[in-house]
Each structure stands twice: as C-alpha cells, then as structure tokens.
Image 1 (cartoon, rainbow, N blue to C red):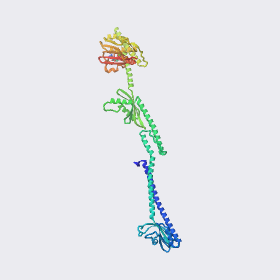
Image 2: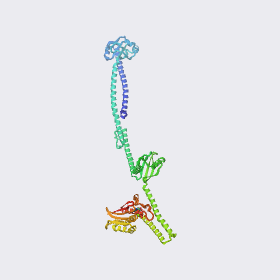
Image 3: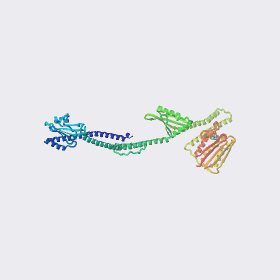
Length: 588
Ligand SMILES: Nc1ncnc2c1ncn2[C@@H]1O[C@H](COP(=O)(O)OP(=O)(O)OP(=O)(O)O)[C@@H](O)[C@H]1O
Ligand SMILES: [Mg+2]
C-alpha cells in the first residue's frame, strides 16, 4: 500500500499541509478582495457625491451644474439630488421607478442627512415594485448634504448596484480557486517527486540490507546524497564491512574448531540439555556406530546407559564427571563436562578416550607376570621337593638317588631354558635387536638342522622326511635365528605326533622368497586356538602343560624371528589330522 510507504506518508503530509494553507489563504484573500472592492466603490461614490455637491455649489443655475455633473458620472452610478428648495433631480441613466426623496426622509439613517447634515453610507435593497427585473436589487447608497453646516437642507444621493462588486468578487474568487488548484496540482507532483527522491536511497538501502541478511556481505549501498541519508548509507556500509569481518572471523574459528575436532584422536559428543546429540566427531561417530551395532534389534537406545547416567549427573551437579564405558570388547574413559550459556547449563560435552589398547597391554603385562611365575613355580617346587628328599635321606637306593638327581637336573635345565627363551624374546622385542644376515647355502643348512632330530625321531618311531628343492643356492638370512625357527617347528611337530607318525620338512624358493614348511600328521590344534598359537605362553593343550611339555614360548620366538626377517608365518591345522606351519622369507 502506498500509504504504508514513506513516500506515501510524506506525500500525504505535504499535500495536507499545502491544502490547509491554500484553503486559509483563499478565504483570507476573498475576504480581502471583497472589502477592497467595497472600499473602492464607496470611495468612488463618495467622490462623485462630493463632485456633484461642489458643482452645484459653484453653479448658480442648478440645471447647468447638473448637466455637467451627468457628464461625469458613469453608467452604473445613479444620482438623486434634492435641492435646498426641495426640488428633485434624477440622473438621466435612471429608468422606471426611482427612489423618491420621501424614501430618504422616512429612512431613519438617511433622514439624518437632512436633519444633521451628515454624510451617510448604507447598503439597501431597492423596492420590489418598478423597474422590472431590477427589483430587490442590493445597492450601496451614499447620502451627502449639499451645503454642510449652513442650515440648507439639500442633499445628493449617489448609489450603485452591488451586483458589479459581486461580479468582480466572483471573478476574483474563480481566479483564486484556479490558482489554488494549479498550486495543489503542482504541489502534488512536486511532493511526489521530492518524497521519491528522498526515499530512493532508503529503498536502495533496504534492498542492500536484505541482501546482507541473506549473507551477501559484498552488497554496497551507494552514497547518493550528502545529507543524513548519505551518512546512513556510510554507516550502513561500515556496519556491513564490520559484519563481514566478524562473520569471517567467526567462520574461521568455527572451521578451526571443526578441524581440531575432526583430527582429534578422542571422541567428542556434545549434548543439549535434554540429551539430544548436537555434534560428534569421527571417533565419536564410530563409537556410536559400535553402540548401535551392539544394541541390534529395534529397541535402539540412543546412548549407552553409563554415558546417560554420567550426563545426567553432570547436568545435575554442574560438575565434571568421569567414568568408564565398555562394550564389544572395547573400553572407553568418558569425561562429561557441563556446558554453559550466560551462567545457565545448556548441555554437556563428553570426551571419549579409547582405552582398549592400554587395557590390553595392562592385561598382557599382568598375564605375563602370572605366566612367568606359574612356569617357574612348578620346577622350583620340584627342585625343592626332590632336594629335600635327598637331604632328609628319604631315598635309600643309589638308583633312586640317581633318579632324583636326574629330575633335579632336568627341572633346572627347564628353568634355564625358560629364562633363556624369555631373555631371547625380550632381546628380540627390544630396539637393539639386530639380525646377522649372510648368504647361507640352503641345502646344507636344512640338512644339518634335520639331522639334529634324527635320533629323537627314531626314538619315537616317527619318520622324519625332507624334500629340499634347492640345489646349491644361497639365500640371505640370519642362520642362527633361522635354525632356531626350524628347530622350534620340528620340535613341536615331533612332540605332538604320536608313535608311527610322520613329520615332513619341505623347502623351496617361490616368487624369490624362501619357503619353508614343516608338517605332521599329529594331534593338530583346535580351530579356536589357531589365532593365538603365536602368543607368549600360549599352549593349546591345557591338560598337558605339566611335566615334559614346553613353556609356550617357542612359537612366539619363531614369530618374532620371522617378523625380523620381514617374512610371514602361517599355520593350517585340523584336529586329529595334523598341522602345517609355512614360513616365507623375502630376499632382502
Ligand atoms: N605341530 C603341532 N601340532 C599340534 N599342536 C602344536 C604344534 N605346534 C604347536 N602346537 C601347539 O601350540 C602350542 C604352542 O607351541 P609353542 O612351541 O609356542 O610352545 P611349546 O611347544 O608348548 O613350548 P616350547 O616350544 O617353548 O618348549 C603348543 O603348546 C601346542 O599345544
Ligand atoms: Mg614348541
């Protein structure tokens, strides 16, 4: 609506103002003109009356004087002269009924002209009858005594129709109205033009403001004028510039924060006060994904209950809360801190640290200590028992004594081996571990190691076969360490193969890699144990961990040596059918 715009308001105000002024001016002007015309007329009639009076005074003969006088008067001016001796003369421009001297004598005002010798001016209405068409006409009459103050009672009455004046004033009014209308129209155009001009920069600014609100901070408002509106445009531009800088800084801060959050190793989840998740980073995202997976089913709980409790507590106590969450075999330490806005709690932020590795390492260390003590306890107990028996002379025969001493010797050897293996492992896992790589002729190397076990195999009635594909080729590796690998593997195979079984060692070079395989048709390893056989102290057959069985370190050492050679080791096994270990060592 135009009335709602500044243009409309300004325009209407100016128009209203001008209309008011014009109206008052017109009224005053008309009043003024009417009075002016009346005054003019009065003055004219007065002077006519005076002239006739003077003329009659200076002419002895009244007739002659009047003749001259009739020449002087205008067509509209009518004259009635009453001489001292009561004769009456009418000006020749009168027709029909004339005003009689008796009319003047009877009139209370005009009678004073005769009685008091005073000049009288009065507006009267001509008698209705007579002079058809002109009856009831309003006239202005001036009555003037012929000889002032000398007692003679003559008088001259001059009158003129007011129609002339009315006509004049009507014409004037029309003119004034015309002028007013023109002024009004001009004002309208001018006011419209003015208000449009004043508001056009404002409208431009409005458009720019909307643009800025939409985020286009480059929209500039042109400074068209040097007045307050121009200053407003400058202020607006300054504000826009400041806003742009601030928004830029804000965005940068936001991006920086987002970057930090994204690259953080810890998960971050921000909650609103009612527990809705507002923000997460990738680690937190994977935490939630894992939780949803853990939940399964349809009855999805948004967050782990432990986390919900921590959040509720943090909001309630307004204090940082620390706790632990664990599912899917993983552990997280959670710190929930309340978030404030102007002193009021608006939510909380949870920082999740994945502690799975630490937990695992902790468990490993504890297990290791437990395993080592456990492994040492058995031989120590044996040593103690048998040596005490010897000291207390419990044994009587020399044969028994020898048997006891043999056990003591075996157990101390076992302990020694365990300690050596542990030391070996520790050395391999330390940073200083170095392989002594050299070119080793493969065939003699393998045969030498296999030969070591020939006696043991024959003893256990196991056929020990070897298929060495290489001729007189050499391959770079650490011969002492690789001997350890082969020894451990063959030892295991022989140990877990019953009498009459078969152990085979195969060797070859595949894809420029040294390939070693030790297979047996022994007891095999349960499928669920396969992933763990390379761990320290791992023994698949728990029931046979006592006595002659090993320490569970052999395969861990093998794995470490193969890893040091940047090779791989694989195990395939079927319970009751046999086991195959395959080692691949790349040429360096
Ligand atoms: N060839 C095999 N057949 C069946 N089970 C095996 C075989 N090789 C290893 N295992 C299983 O894997 C476990 C781990 O073997 P590893 O060589 O690490 O320990 P160990 O032989 O018991 O002791 P160590 O070698 O230190 O004397 C063994 O206890 C055994 O249960
Ligand atoms: Mg072993």
